[in-house]
Figure 1 (spheres, one colour):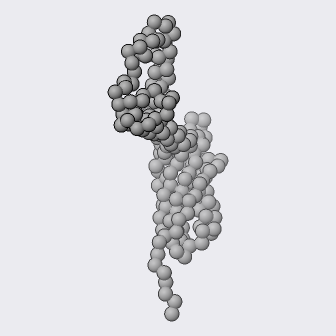
Figure 2 (cartoon, one colour):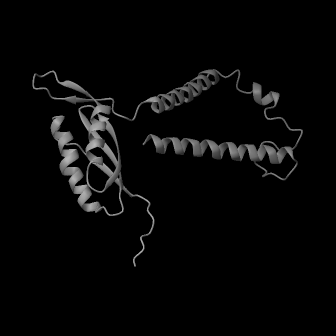
Figure 3 (cartoon, rainbow, N blue to C red):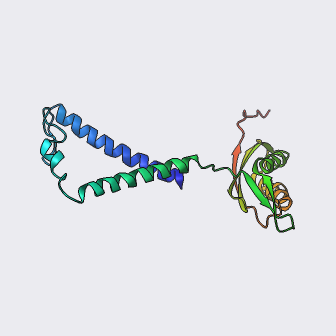
Length: 192
């Protein structure tokens, strides 16, 4: 979701800056601009003195400006804090049976899952990232398959063995897992 918001905000900001900058450049260079464009010549100013003083005497002007700027600042701060928030899960809550629970480091569970996934036949490399909430983790697994590997069999063994062991050892009811499979690059083999 954050990735989509980033792209939309950057796209809109870029489009606005491109249009305004292109229009100002065209007007400053003396090229023809549309009749509704506020600046139409190289000697024209962006804001005339009358435009700068027009709303100053109105009672709603300063609260509106300050409110608008406050909204922009709050949205910018929200975007910055959303960028800083970690997408990787730091710890997993394990039911220890005493009502308190125990915390398991997310990196430790990732490392065990990676090791067990790499030990499967036909898997060259594995990369695991835990996301979600600490009481309901989710796993993203990337597997690099060797040329002779069967993707269906590898996926079945991964879900039954590696993910099943991790789910059971952490005491989780479910461990939703998204798996991305890639084939390792290899040379063509000659048949003689």
